[in-house]
Amino acid sequence: MSRPRILVTRRWPITVEAVLSERFDVTLNKDDIALDAGHLHEALRAYDAVLPTVSDKLPAALFEGDAIRTKILGNFGVGFNHIDIAEARAKGIVVTNTPGVLTDCTADIAMLLLLSVARRGGEGERELRAGAWTGWRPTHLVGTKVTGKTVGIIGFGRIGRAFAQRCHFGFGMDVVFHSRSAIDPMEAARYGAMQLPTVEDVLAVSDFVSLHCPGGAENHHLMNAARFAAMKRSAFLINTARGDVVDEAALISALELGTIRGAGLDVYEAEPNVPERLRAMDNVVLLPHLGSATEETRTAMGMKVVDNIIAFFAGREPPDRVV
Image 1 (tube, rainbow, N blue to C red):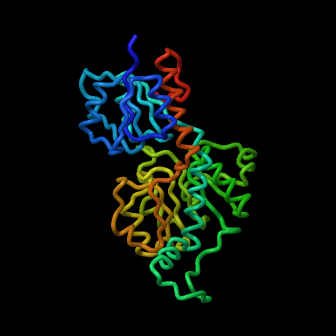
Image 2: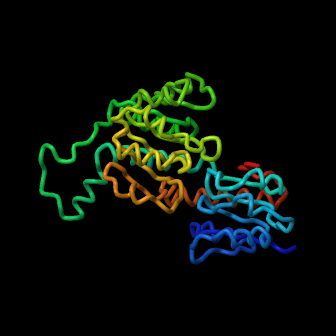
Image 3: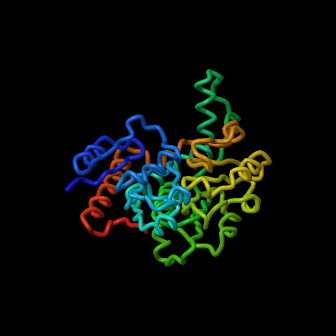
């Protein structure tokens, strides 16, 4: 019996690619160049499985027609709002993701962004590398104290809880959060956190607001002009969730007008394109989507995908099935 044909859309950790190559008829993207819509359209008709990443857009149009061969999309990532789930379901395509293994590293990046923007670390490094630092002085790059401040978390899943733990027990911060479902107060207390009824309640009291909610239609532009106006003028926004959770134009306006003090971002609305006005701001720390970017985590994510597609082609239920 022939082995299933599988396409890996980007380069993955070499150990994961090796396991896939041993078990399947695999096509690797050795040039690591993002596939365009045309290539992805063809892939759905030529491969038994396609293994996309969050940078691969799979809208409804790619699923149109009756010639689709793909039976499973093994997504490399937790978020799957880049895939039209309804269309995949309609075509009988299974979709899986990689939950759990990137929790700590993404929470670490959120903490890095919070500290960097509060203490003006990005500005300081740029000044030093440019040879413009003239020495220590009392008023130089004065930032915001982190310890003891209030952090508000939007979305209290695995990553939100891990971030709360770091903030409360590492920096003595008061933690408040909003979640679409009620969290047992005793569970919240494990992370030094308290649930508030609305997003606006969280924004009103927070010195830092960190986003840890899913992307997609439900949370599209959750942070908009009205909600930036509801934040403290001295507050900072941190986003390691998904770019579409933030209305980027409204954020830029809020930063330019001083509606909020600054932002730390790891994700963007039109990745890899980041608006020039955002890149030009000193009160913003920008990272190129590094949330899960450690050797250990990226390998674990890849092996999650391997486990899912092995189970699928063996006739078993994939452990991380989304649809």
